[in-house]
Length: 424
Image 1: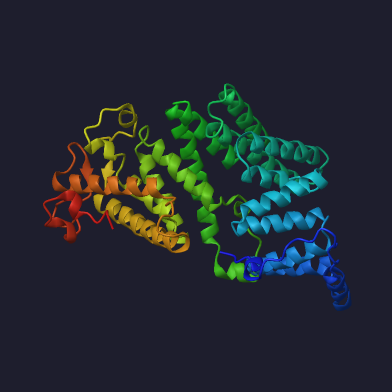
Image 2: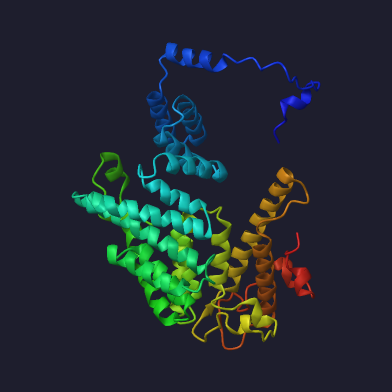
């Protein structure tokens, strides 16, 4: 917490007759900058170098200083906002982007897409559509093939972002479904093989309870991602060092967030095609190799390892939510040992996050993962139940002695819930 320096000094009453003396600090600083040869352009250059070295906080200092010297320069505002987004300072970034769009709305149209990401509901849609309009104008006047392809992809992504908003925050809007169909069609018209467009279409079909169509679409997305990742991983160290040209697949390599969303959709569609559980595990495993500290991935891997079983199955619950959940199939393979391992890892990571939140914000701080934490506990209780006798009709992965795998620390405990370490 920042300490206000005013509170460290005695209180002085306000004077109605005396005007405050103007400070020469600003003039002195400008004179010092001029004398030392510091210019906004040099500071921007230094900021870009810092970014290339992954020194994001240092880049923020350079860009902030550059903006103080050129307070109306929207290019500096946009660069600083980008850095602040990377540092998690979203509120500051929004204010900068709003200022930038107000001063020069058509300069660097991509800033409208950044702004749309940081806003919500109707405000977000408005920013995305402004960005789409400006970028489409650029596309119409662009003749260079690579530039056209880049612009088309960015516009298609913006259309997909609007769909996601109408599938979540604005799902109750009376025109939500029509809007989603229109936007995803626009995205795929621009880029027919767009991974973003196809994934968004799968998500839309899933929300329309057209799960069979969704399963086929997301399966094709998985196949494309797998191919791209194989090509990228096949690039040798020698090729990288020698500077050999990158294959075109490098440009299509999805970001981590996109790939995690694909894992989710594979799991959600797997009741139509049980093989999608294996695909979810395959992709999730390779993603964990890149980011083993991603708690969401550990949770999703646990869910996929259960092959469609959910806590509803062990609660004899007949409510609609459970009846509509992913049902187990006789063709599924349930790997209890792997599921338990993944859920326990997710729980351990969330315990650590809870402790860190308590240290930073106090013991009464609201835990942002509470709902997910409770879901992990429910799944661990389900595994404990299944481990005692198995689930009829299911194929269980077993340990070497033929029994469903259970950690030794749980075997001798008569009370299943007390036996699981779920209430640390």
